[in-house]
Amino acid sequence: MTVPAPYHLALSAVLFTLGMVGVLVRRSALVVFMSVEVMLNAVNLALVTFARLRGAVDGQLLVFFVLVVAAVEVVIGLAIIVDVFRAMETVDVDDVDLLRG
Amino acid sequence: MAVLFGVVACLALAGGVGVIASRRPVHSVLALLLVLGSLAVDYLLLDAQFIAVLQLIIYAGAIVVLFVFVIMLLHARSGEVARVPAVLPPAAAISLCAAFGLILLAVLTGAAIPPAAVGPAFGTVQEVGRALFSRFLLPFEAASIVLLIGMIGAVVLGKRLPPSPPDAARPAEGPGGGR
Image 1 (cartoon, each protein chain N blue to C red):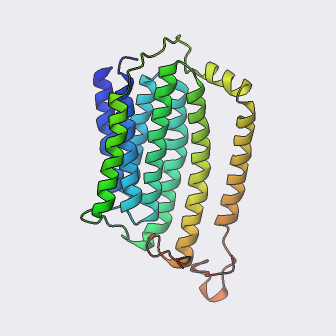
Image 2 (image 1 turned 30 degrees about the horizontal axis):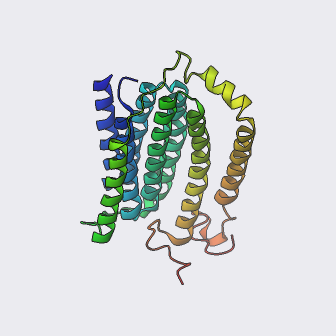
Image 3 (image 1 turned 180 degrees about the vertical axis):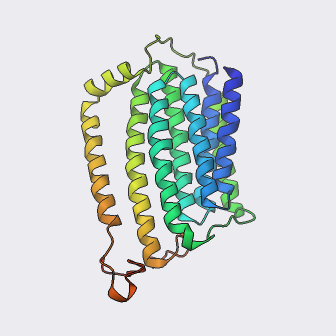
């Protein structure tokens, strides 16, 4: 581990913040979804870093499960986005407000 | 190795900025691919070979392709819908900066833990697989059920209604309710 762990963790923090900015700022549901993926990857990087830091492989297994759940999440989420587009002709999250009270 | 990490970190950050700043969703996907690839290299630096390969196969191979397909399906007709506001709302910007500063402060000023010594087998398919099939067997099987449910859900959600006769050329164009 030639590069100290705080550098990896700082990269993870910056990526997570970038993803959060994307979720808050962008209005296209697709780009919001990609920003969520960036956030998930930032967390994965932190998990892998801690796994290496502790010398235990458990963190990498957690990343494995995160990958599985992320894959399912993307499939379901994109299917929902396609459905929303079919129904409303838009994927702009500001326009999809049928449940707004 | 330090140089490689620097390059990888810069590429990942550039990709992260590209994801949220690109005007076209296709460019966002390519930037996302850049992030995923750089992080795969970073995983190699952290002795996680198996995770690095999984990252490339699952994320870069499957998820990005799925994104590209959906963009191809949607944005051919939806046009440009996304735009980045000129500035963040100040409250959001302040809270974001505060959260980010706190994280970075905690990361950089925390007690430096010396990394544990690991053998050459750390992070290989053998070791990860052994843990996966012994201590993590139940979550592993649960993951397969989650994947199955995801497949069924995607089929159910993506199933098109039978096209109405006057609109047969473009089926499922705004079916409204009924699903």
